[in-house]
Every structure is written in structure tokens, then in C-alpha cells.
Image (cartoon, rainbow, N blue to C red; front, side, top):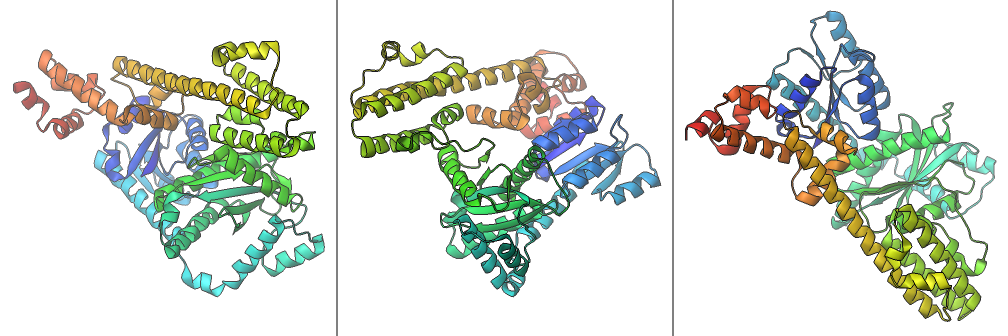
Length: 537
């Protein structure tokens, strides 16, 4: 299913188009709304959008200016232009900017739906071609990919080359990577669905995913990838020649493209991938350290979760005491607590305690060191979450006040495990309460704003991203927000038909349907009879 963005400076028209057309019938899953070109670009920065419908005449950034910027940054997005003028010059510019369609206002519902369906078909055809297995091309160049993989794997394992030698190898393999240029690394894990396939199908799917990555990134970046011994795909990402970017700008753009990669893999290949992106570094300095650091963070900060995207911007931190290396290896306990990665916390502490037992036995000094690290990390995390340690720790808080009295590793391990269990339970309850509170706010808002309620207006009211709000609402209630809105509107309309003498068009307007004909159609689809027949009965 695709994601649609509707842009117009007339709020009523935008809400009408978003709410009153059966978008799901033409393959649309989510509809986003913007009332200006700038707002539209902000939404596209935060959410992968597939199709845009925009008016031409808007204050500030016009529709033509908008699609020009969209095509510059998101070349695969399909754009449909709406205009109140049958002007050849506008149509000519629309063609110049590769608009998918050019419609005259007021456009009929069927005309809009057909335009969106056409754009969706074009997208499907394009991405199927991108993700298909080009066997002839692969067969022709089968030796070059193998050699490229071998070279990248050797660099990841720490093989050192002089700049001259490395440049020579890169030239032979026709790789446009150069020593001393900035790069970022991206680790990708293909998940569940992909490895439930046969070996042959799994290989084809791997090829398709990497091909989609190439399609998304190569407009602005050079890409070089391989598959490591753990089954992760490692991508080196370097800006195009003579195009320098600041680190923050480069990371931000790579994050956007990584989100698009996840979106299209899920959309067209029906699977999920998790990604870890590293900070910018100089090629090929510390490439092995960067790779090892990414692996550690993948396992400990993402773990068994699915469909995650993580950008690593903090520096690797090492503890001063070599004897307790696991305690100070990244990610630090304080960071894992902050992120709520409970499985990774358990794994890290198990490694730290095992190292403590193996190397230092019952050394009281090292038991104290471990205790103070755990206690300070817990203190920071608990207070940052605006909680009191005494509430989380209960009677164990007195132990903290009077100082540690641990004489064995086992005592410290038992104390730590008990507190972490309490903290995890408390935080899980807090998240649940927060979500329940959000659901309550959503339902209260909708009940008092039924006429103009939409996903966008509800998300603004509760100060959440529309995509995130949709997910938690369905997770908590089992019903999508759009389905909830539609059901509530129909139930309210049915109640008004039974208990008031309001005319059909008045009831339609009160529940947010500007077109009475569409209200009648939706009502009949739900109840099997028209509103008038319902009232007569």
C-alpha cells in the first residue's frame, strides 16, 4: 500500500479530499495533509511519501516549485497537479517536471482516483523492474562483484593497504572510492520472511534488496556493499565526486534514504530490514573499528527487534580499567537504560559479571567498581525519566543510602537483577499508561470535533507524528484511526437519523461529509440501505 500527500492552501478542500474518497480502493494506505508547499516538504522529510497531489496556485512555494524540489530530492515520487486554469504554459511546465498527471479543478472524484491509480501502477512497474533479478547482467559481470566483495571483506577484517595499492585495486574493479574521502557505513539485516524462503529465492531476494538500495542511494552517493560472515550486509556510502557535505547534513540525508529503503522493501518484497548507520569517517581509516562498533550496537541496541533504524553519532567509549572491559565497552549501560533495551542490558551485565568472575574472582575492589557503575547508571536513568529511586527500589533503597555491603559477586548480581526487574516493570506500566492516555485524548478530541477530525488534526492535537499515532492506536485498540473515524461518523449519523428531524445533507455535514452523495454511498456500504430508508424503517 502507498502513502499519499495532498497539498492545497484551502483547508476545507484538503480535508474533503482526504476524508471523503475511498483511497484504499486505489492502493492508498495513509493520507497526509499539508496546507502549503513548505509544510509538504517538512512532511516528506519525516515520512516516506509515494504520491503527491498538489494545487498549482499557492502563496509562497507554488505547486510547480514544490514538484521541482520533490523531483530534485525524491525522484521516484509521483506528482499530480491540480489547476483552476486550462493554461498551456502550466501544462508544459508540468510535463517538464515529469508530473504524473495534470487535472483541472474542480476534478471529479473518479478522475482523481484514476490519476492516483495510474501513478500507483507506474510506481509498481518501476520498483518491480528495479527489484527484478537481471540475470544476464549479473552473468556478464559475475567476476567483478565477487572481487569487489572480497576486497571490502578484507578491509573489514583489518587488512592494510597503502594508498597507492588500494587506489590501484579500486580502479581495476571500477569502484569510484578514493582514500582520504569521507564515508559512512550502513549495516543491514534482512529479517524473518527473507530467510523462510528456499536458498535460491533467498538469494534472489537479497539481490533485489541491494538493487533497491542502489536505486535509492546512487543519485547522490557512491555505494559499495558486501555480505559478511554473520549474514549482515555492509554498505560503504561516499558522496559523489566534487560534492562535499557536512557530517550532520550527510547523516540526515542518509537517514532519509535508509527509511525509504525500509519502506520499499516492505512494500514490494513483503519483508523487513533493520539498519545501523555510523557517523562520518575518512576512508579507509578505522574501517574495521567502525564495523566492529556497528556490529556491537546492532546486537545490543536493536537485538531481536524488527524493522529498526539506528544512527550512531556518539563516539566509542572505552573504560580505563582493562580488567572490566565489558562494563565500559559501548554501548554503555547508561545508554542502554536510556533506550530501554532490556535484553541488551541483561546481555551486557551477564558478560560483565562473567568477566568479573573469570578474571577477578571475589576481588572486593572490582565488585565495588561494578556496583558504583550500575548504581550511577540506574540513578541517572531513573531521574531522567522523572521518577524517584526510592519508588523503584523499595526497601533496597536503604542499602544504597548506607553504602554497599556486598562481599560476593553473587550478592551484587542478585541485588542488580531485582532492581532491574522492578525498573523494567515500572517503565512498561508507564509506557502502557502513556499510550492509554493518548488513546483517551484521541477519542475525546474526535467526539467533540467529529465534523473536521482527520489523522493530521488528531496528531497535531496530541503532539505526535501521524504515522506513530496510527501505529500505537491500532496496537492498543485493534482498530485503525481511519476505521474508527468512519465507524463513529456512521454510528453518529444513524443516531441522528433516528432521533432528529435534520435533513440528510445537514446530517452529512455534521459528521464531516461535504458531499451528500458520498455520505449516502458510505452509509449504504455500511448498513446496506440508504440513510432515508434507514430513517423510514
